[in-house]
Image 1 (cartoon, helix red, strand yellow):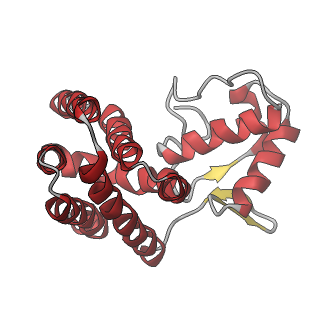
Image 2: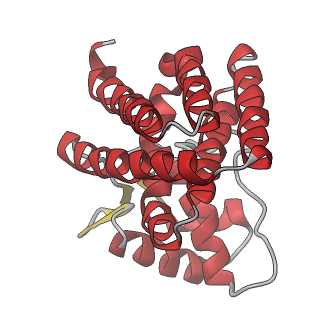
Amino acid sequence: MLSTGLPQGAVPRLERPGPLRDRVYEALLELITTRALQPGQHLVESELAGHLGVSRQPVREALQRLNTEGWVDLRPAQGAFVHEPTEEEADQLLTVRTLLEAEAARLAAANAGTAGITALEELCAEGERAVAADNVDAAVAMNARFHAQVMELAGNAVLAELAGQVDRRVRWYYTPVARQRGQQSWIEHRELIAAIAARDEQRATEVMRAHTEHTRRTYHAREQS
C-alpha cells in the first residue's frame, strides 16, 4: 500500500491532451469514485503529486474543485479529506436515480430496436462473467455501462444529461454493495431486457424501479450485513 492508502497500480495514467489541472482532477475523481481513495481518507497534496508525477499546484487546484463539487472536504488546519456521504445524501441521490432510470426504461421499451437490445444482452453477459469471476471493479464498470446503454436507447437528450450528472455518485454508492448485489443484480437486468424487447413500457418501468430500489435498500443495509 502507498502512504495515502492507494493500492499499488491503482493510480490512473494521466490522459493527454488537456490542461494538467483537468487531468489531475479526473484522475483523483476516478480514484474517489472507485473507492481506491476511501471516504474519510486524508488527502496529502505532496503524496498525491508524487503518485501522479505532477507538481502540487494542479493537485491543489483539483482538490479545490472537488471540494466545490462535494467530493472532498477541506478542513481548516487539517487539510483535505474524501467526503463521507451521509445516509440522507445517499438516499436523496439514489431516489432521484430511480426516477430518472425508470423513465429511461419506459422510453427504451418504446424506442429500442434489435441492435439496441443485442447491445444490452452483450453487456449483461459481460457483467455476469465479471460477477462469476468475483471481479468487483469490472462488475461495477459493466453495471454503469449497462445503465448508460438503457439511457441511450431512451433517446431523450435532456434525460441523459440529468442522469450523467448523478452517474459518478451512483457508481460511488454502488461500489461497496456490488459484491452483495452480485448475481441478483444481473438477473434483474435480464428481466429488464425481456421487458424492453417485448416493448412493454409498464413492465420495463416496474422492473427498473424495483431494481434501483433494491440497490438503494442494500446500500442502507450494508452496515448491518
